[in-house]
Amino acid sequence: MFHGYQCMHDDRVTLLLMWTDTILTTVAAFVFVATHATHVTILWALLWIPVVVLYATGSGKRGSSNYMITHSLWHLGAGALLLWLGE
Image (cartoon, rainbow, N blue to C red; front, side, top):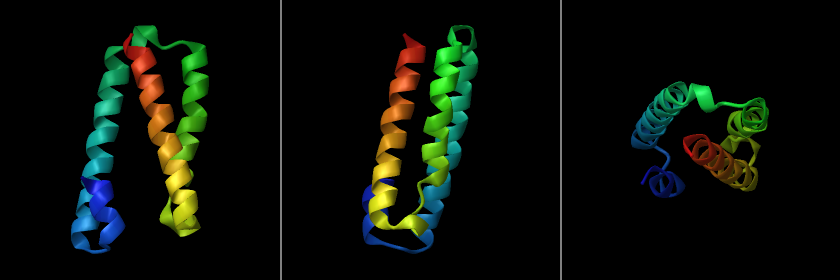
């Protein structure tokens, strides 16, 4: 929902949805990783580092194409690692 709205609007609602998305998903990821901490391997942790870098560098300030690429890679990488952790 947020990404569709974000592409068409740049207002207070977008900012509110962005921070809601960021806070809730970050907390959910921390809780998920904490509850599966015994399954975290060195390889998983090393792969998580570039995924977090993608998240940190993916902003609209670097252009919309760069944002779309880094943000998409963030979703794919984070999703794959969380699925792997949940096995």
